[in-house]
Length: 365
Ligand SMILES: [Zn+2]
Image (cartoon, rainbow, N blue to C red; front, top):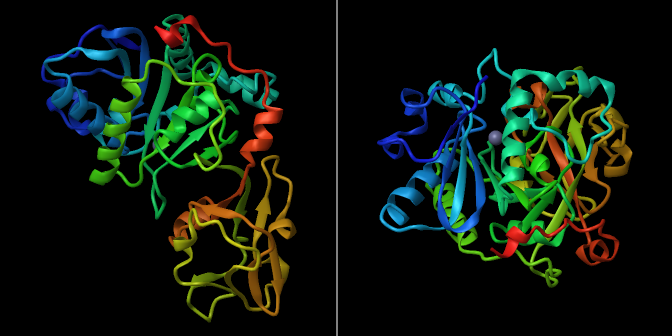
């Protein structure tokens, strides 16, 4: 897996939709474009081939805003899985998920199981990209994605640092801190510059493109990202605490009383709502406390911390916010019912924050 590096945009590239990029690019391509400020904004698109919002935003940005004028800041653009984009899939069968192959910043003492997987040609390529951008003293890093289901746009970070929060809050009021899954791009870059992952709703939705285009313009024009604490109300910070699954042995449905678990019909409308304790998820016909199975980040069972099962009802036990809730039964069987998140107190974070990221001289250039 060879990385291609270019110092210009190939003619006609901006005319191509994601599915046609393969006609001009042989694979993952890193394109460096000069701007007034030297230290580049790194933007990653199409790590997942069927998530084209990032590419649509970038090509509109470069075509309409900067075709005749200089970029306010240099831009290093990574176009990821060109082959998967051709076939409009997340990744091809012979490929790994690109956004699980980046070097880890916070988990250097990886478990042995993680370590032996880390030397595929993909891992080597993404380590190369990371090293190149560290050398170029990237100003900030933005990785653009789409997701499925009824989820709002949001930014996610992997480091408790005000400059990361600042970068994220320019995109959304709701910000998620996450450690799982590992091997993601934003985590690799968190070692040397503020980095965010953007979730821009469903692919093909023009609001996602508009929003990320406006965001890229805003970030390109920042001379620095302040490390000052954000004032109360500037962002709502959440972290993931659990994954919830439905046991394979139980039948389930949405508004169907003949199943062992009968979830409320519009369960997915609870995504990204901060729910009070006691919120109804559904009814269990005899399944009792085994109706759901929640595990924490270390795979320890935590069902009873988050759910109550009494009088045949499934209710939340404490204040929490679900995400990725879906009513697609196949997705629930293959993956999970949802993730649970809890609010983090940003005032407390400010007092307990880890040592700050060293401010590179490039931040003000
Ligand atoms: Zn993605």
